[in-house]
Image 1: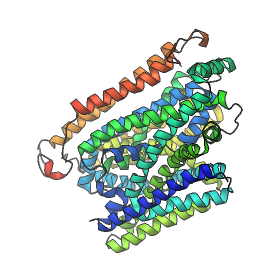
Image 2: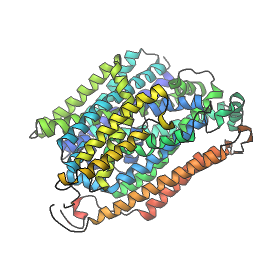
Image 3: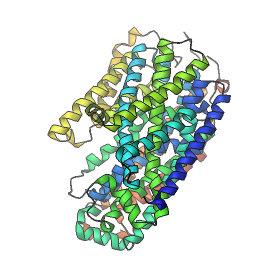
Image 4: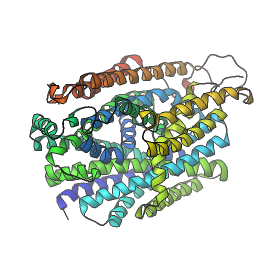
Length: 487
Length: 95
């Protein structure tokens, strides 16, 4: 065991644990258990709001997979990753104050609550709740597997042992602390990511003999690595641009991101979060992916992409510093998992249990159901991650793109288009997910349809479905709830 | 609810304008990012010029582009966004 590396990681876990306890104390004093446990009583300030959005979004795939892809594809992948700068300002500006005002009016705690208030339809509620539960559950399992592999590669523990440590660490603070613990630990994790990637970038540049030397080495090995077109010249401008939808503007449709846009205290917090979020997300994405590219001349021949970051950190930094830096990808994974866990649990508890099974539940009852549900979901994910079943891996493929295509229009047009109605929302969700799955299989068999990423067409198709169906069913709906629009 | 011709909540008009600002920012962001990357990057790598150690296309598109966006967001927050209360008391009217 490499104690130099382990001690900073252990310290990190202990701090997170105390944040969980602190949040639990505040939770017991709060007015509404549900609103506090699943939304932190809407008290987030600017820094915490920005950090929790960035951290929720920057997951294992962007933290380990991203730099790994940059390692093999080159600067073209960094260009692609920089499309994510838009997430820093776009989500908060588009959903903006209107979303906060409207969700407060509906007393919404989850994204589904908002849809319920806006469309007034059980079909929409159940469709939303189940797509969140199914897709995000799978996404979460995939993240746990990533977290366990990371602990395994740092500590040398067995996969199961590593998974167990990861599960216990995450479950404790999420179960007892709820949303406040998740968002505050996200802030800590975001800060760790920010400085971790910066330190590692500096370390890699020094190890590579400076920028000039690194770019010379890259050009000597394969000149394509320093072009925007990728190592084999196959990254077309159109394909790279379509990532603006998947990881840039489309993120607005992800429930775990959207729910954060209703959690801030006041409009000043939101303003501050816009600036902090843009700075932090851009800085982290730029550093992290450059590390991947620069690692290539420093440590050639890494075959498993996800291991680029851990290997290069252990190689170029002293042990204790590597420990701090490696807390960053661990933080990225934990901060995504914690949000997903809480979101799935909120869907089960609030959207299904309180709405349909036991509307008259008392605070005490809801409290135990919330703790219990979060724990049960966590344990099921843990058991599934031990030996991941096929369908989890399968569903995870659709999780982010599918949810984006399903939710983006019912959420955004629900806010800004009065004529949007429940039939449009249902059509949009069904078409979004359905066409995403269909096009996914098409692309797998025949290559990218029209040369763009899978998510692109379903986002347009679900828009068309939403608009057309809403217009055709105009007369069937008495009034559009919540916008005050009279019919 | 029901039949009414009351003007919309004033806060919503502010929010609508701010959403449009968001779209404009994203369009500027995209054009800057795309323009520099594929205008300056579209030639053989041995003809690339380097700025502060980075290929010019990358420097302008990703590094300067990032700082430009941060600058624009700060400008927008300082001069274009409006503080509004989020709870119902702050609205022009109650519904």
